[in-house]
Image 1 (cartoon, one colour):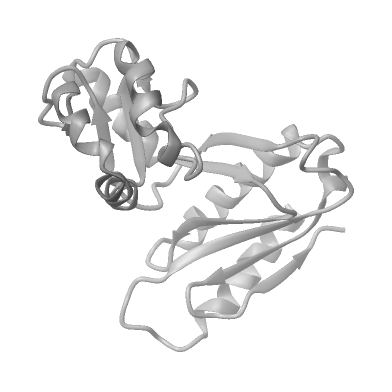
Image 2 (image 1 turned 60 degrees about the vertical axis):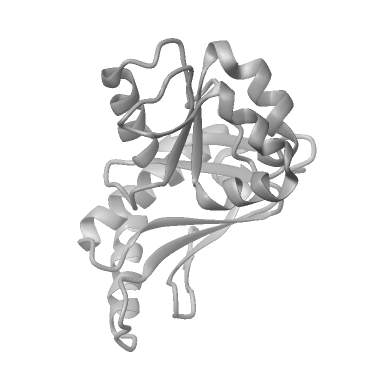
Length: 209
């Protein structure tokens, strides 16, 4: 409960900042401590109750699908050109793939998608069959999920938009916080503090103990 109250206060402070001409993103920063990320890398998908934004999704599928921008096997050749490949990775936030194409996806796109952390993953992003219903369900899941791939002791993630209600932003933060505590080797001990900020503001620090 205490954490929720602190988050509420911090959001009230952030909302006093200068109005901007765009809907600012609310960022959550989790500062970690007392464990080695090299030994325990963090890599997880967390489903949040309120969508942060619609992600741009592309699918590596056997046939064209009108629900998602599709790259079929015949089009893979185009991406042997590194420039095209880089453009593709920049353009989309998330990639899904049909399981049957995964080996080809890995050889054609892996070298760029891998380092960018955008390889379709078994946790979220690989489908057996590309039926409309399956694709649409996956899209919804992707749009409501936040990916954490921590390489350093400070994790920064978009957790909401300024236009969302405080309760919705707080709910999203709590879900991510609780999911993180679950996977950290020493639970809350490993979290030094958390901060929240809008795109253009200074962060508000929240102490946890």
